Length: 162
Image (tube, rainbow, N blue to C red; front, side, top):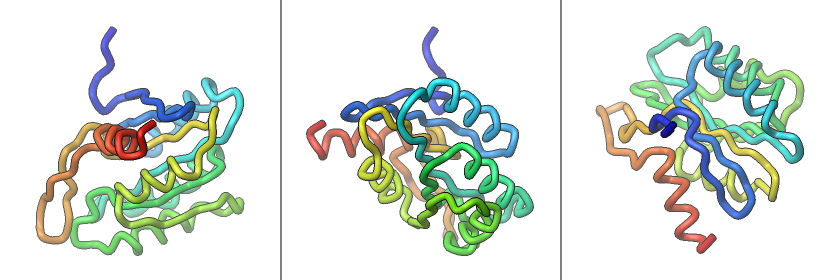
């Protein structure tokens, strides 16, 4: 069975497993992290995600709390921030992370994905959540092109000659 673009797209860079998924709700997070924990027998779990602007503000700290139960490193980034500041959205997510898990805020999505790759070692698992195969980012002045999370991983792999 072929995978659906943006849903559990499995990739690999230099012995690091990467899953790209559209998960962006508390239910979606619970499911993807349970799956990640089931397949990740050794190594760290690293996640890159954000939360959409002008949508469901009350879920932001919940997403942070869920991620903090499963992950060793959380990298917060942009995800269709619209007219909200990414740093403000990320602060609301971070409010739910109360167990001391290392958390970084990197507003640029590509740079956040790069940081995840740089922070990972062989046998680690990176989850890149929220955008899936979408090729746009909704920002303050409208929708802007985005290469997609899977293409970002491919570009990082190519640029680093992995």
